[in-house]
Image 1 (cartoon, rainbow, N blue to C red):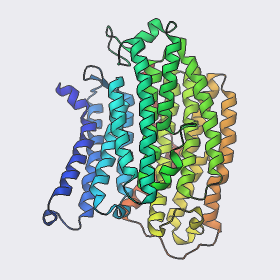
Image 2 (image 1 turned 135 degrees about the vertical axis):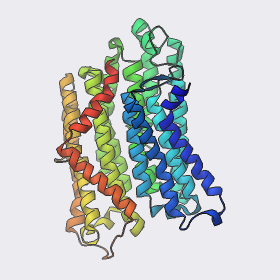
Image 3 (image 1 turned 120 degrees about the vertical axis):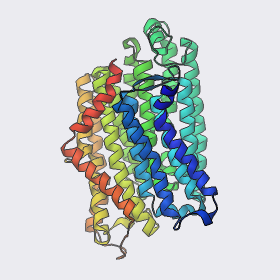
Image 4 (image 1 turned 180 degrees about the vertical axis):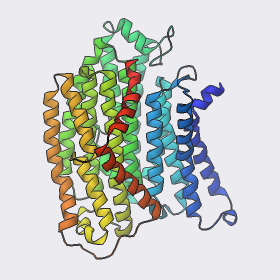
Length: 497
């Protein structure tokens, strides 16, 4: 039992620190050090710091294995995402310094919700049981619905309500798909130790007999998780929620929520439903969604005047790139090799998009505007921010020497190697060309246009630190990607077992 609790330690660290932050808020102000903001920020950082340290200890002690009657597992895949979500949470906390003043007296709740959501996502990546997956998903969703509405103005409230309503529908659809899967297999566990019932075993033994039901269940699951991954046609919430949410929350949704969605989809489809007799069905579905998502996302991004809406549609297009990897795995690229391309892309995208949003947090906090037109001449006002945002946009486009370029080459190569998906790679490359127009248009405006104001854009030291780490990571991993590639391969090796 204690061994099981130890495996849950990284998740518990996030939850305990989040709970202590809420207790902190109830303490009499006379007992709190001044200024109150700085110790709260440092306290919030304890969550990702302790979680990452605990994960490192588990990795060093080789504590891999099932826990809680097989409902969760500590393996290289879950460890990869535990480190990833801890890093994302730390970056969001760092970059919120200064912007968090907009939350007025709700700052403790904000930091606590970030930690609660991050911990739930860690648990989601480690779940191997449909019940635990659903519980983790709801913990993640509820935290994010509240975070989207934290500003409590008209747009933020609208974002929170839309996100809540559409998220509730998506959760119901997911639950319906899970119910079908349970009804056909008689168990909720995706994978189990030898001799115990599991969905993977039932599919391997009776896959051809229950194929129609499995396809129907998969359609419901893809539709529900498509909302979490923000792929077409389930992306309708993205632009409004990104625009209305506090900018750090939009950053969190763009990377953490998307990573969690793809993590659980990979668990379900490449562990529970990985039998070759039916896996080819998922390839066609994933490929079509990928092509439509890339095209629709890029076309809609072309006409945006608000940078948060633009990055919202951009995230839809980038989700299409992730789906290329999922289609390649299903089409025959190999569970382990193909999955590693998706994990590498996820990590590279998280680093790149966080860098872009950190700059937007700094600029919008100072200017009070998210209009792209207000970024004109930013090179003259804040050269460091302009350079960092330009590098992030170049990486999102997929231009060397950035991690975004390596990620696209890696994932497109997997699709080509799988056979039959060359057409999808052609669509993806053409969409990358389209995306260059709106990404580089922003960069050009920052360097070539006249600024609307000569006022500088001061930033806090925590934000500068987070931005420096993200920017350096984009360059270093674009030049020397092997450490991240090796980590992704290790994490994906669980699918070959």
